[in-house]
Image 1 (cartoon, rainbow, N blue to C red):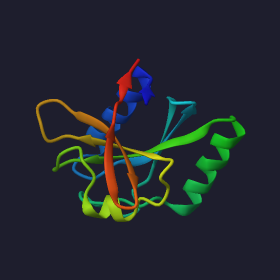
Image 2 (cartoon, helix red, strand yellow):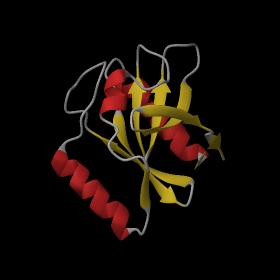
Image 3 (cartoon, rainbow, N blue to C red):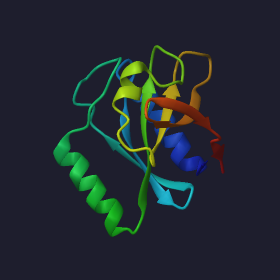
Image 4 (cartoon, rainbow, N blue to C red):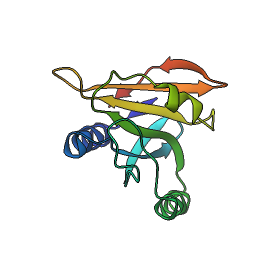
Length: 130
């Protein structure tokens, strides 16, 4: 998966702005290239999990489709834990065709990783920044 530099910078900045709560949203693009981030409100207002506002989620998906883009990934931050899916992330992964991008703020620098989750099996995938 490829993520444009400006989108990468946007989601990392959002993770810091929302800290200590998790940020969340969709990443959209064409093919394997993410060209847009769609931040959403974390309805849970939690530092350990998130959920989308269904009305906002519907509007975002509609806009993505109107732009003839595809939801390529869901992203969220882990303010206090490493960039790997939690048990809850794995259980709630409903679409094996969507990647899960996690931004960890634990270290000196943000750690951003991408995963595919299918049948509760997690596989890290390459994430290149362009």
